[in-house]
Structures are given as C-alpha cells and as structure tokens.
Length: 252
Image (cartoon, rainbow, N blue to C red; front, side):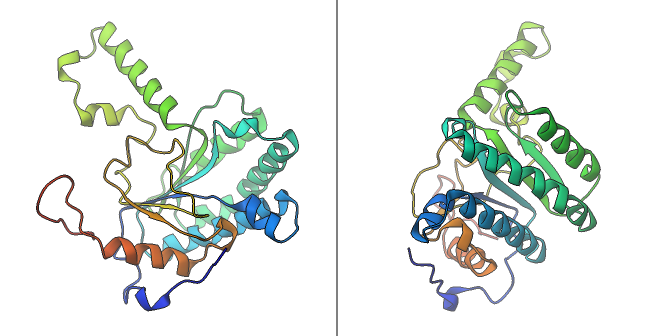
C-alpha cells in the first residue's frame, strides 16, 4: 500500500485550529503481514503512531482528538492478539501518562466497562483522575466502544429519567439527547479520518459524525505521521460544509 503524501497540498499554517478530529486507526495487521511480521508488531508500531499523532495534535492546536482503539466487536479476535493489545494499552498508559499530564492533556475513555480486566480499569480511572483538571488537548480514547450500544445506553438513561418524572418526553431535543452520550461534553467531530483504505464507519461515533467531513486514506496506521494528518486537514479545508443548507459555512 502506498504511503506517499502530497506535501504540495499542506496548509501554510499548522492546522487552522480544528475543533475536533476523530480517527479510526486501521491497518496494523495488514502492515505487519506485508512485512512478514506477526500482527503484534503491527500493533506495537501502531502505538508509536498514537504517540506521534497526539504530539502533532498538541502542536497543531487541535482542540479535541478522539481515537478508536478497540471496538466492542474486537473481542472476537484470537485471544493471543487480545492479550497483546491489552498489554500495549497498559504499557502506553504507564509510560505516557506523566508526559501527557505535563502537556496539559485531558484524557477521557469512552466505551463499556463490562468485561474489561480490573487492572486496565484501574489504570484508566487513574489517567482520567490525574488529568481531569487539564485544559489543553482533549484526548478521548474509544475503548471497548460501539456507537450503537452508546446510543442504546443513552436512550435507556433518558427513558429512566422520563419514567421518574425528571424530564418531559416532549422536551427531548437533539441537544438533550447528545448530552446523554459518552461524548456529551465534546463538540461533534469536524473531521473523521480512517486509515488503511477501508471506507466505512465501523460503528464509530455514528450520531456525532452526522456532519463530519470524512477522509479515507490509503495509509496503514503504523505509517501515519504528522504529514499524513496535515494532508487530511488540508482536504478538510478544501471542502465546503453546508450542513444540509445551500450556503457553505467556513471549515475553520
């Protein structure tokens, strides 16, 4: 797969200070297979790409970055691969948490907690608590996450409040519904990037990405760099966002 990036389209200014970029990090296994390496090596190199893109987001003044790290459907993968992925997650938190905190990054983790081993839950809670007062990059990790389940869970919470008389069903608006989602405190993504050439959302941020600009890249996630991110952002700035209307709105 080609990893060539046309640097001639990169913006002169860093990023235009995008509000929210979401990324489906795909292609670790195929990256490894093309090199005759085990899938675990693809995942390990993918973690390095996470470090690179978080640093780039900080430097480019991106407000929010949401990364799809592990879906609720990924539990069907071989147990050896799942153990490798969980081990990488634990090492990432232990190794990088202090540095993320130093750079004023606020960490959120969205997704179901059911079925996640206690040690990982403890590390997640530690990362969230330590960075809860930070006001820099808002880094959200979607872990054991599925958008349909998120929407169902939000609907159940709203239904319980209506049943208890805490809200009037007639007063349920899109904004109210959004506040019950895992990402309720965040703006909707402006830009959704998926690597590896696949062109689908794979049950990721289905509500939130209703009007996101979608960029699909023929680059495996381990080859994702700051230049790749800037090229995707350049595509975003070249588009006209109408949000269903006739007049384009600014993409800044």
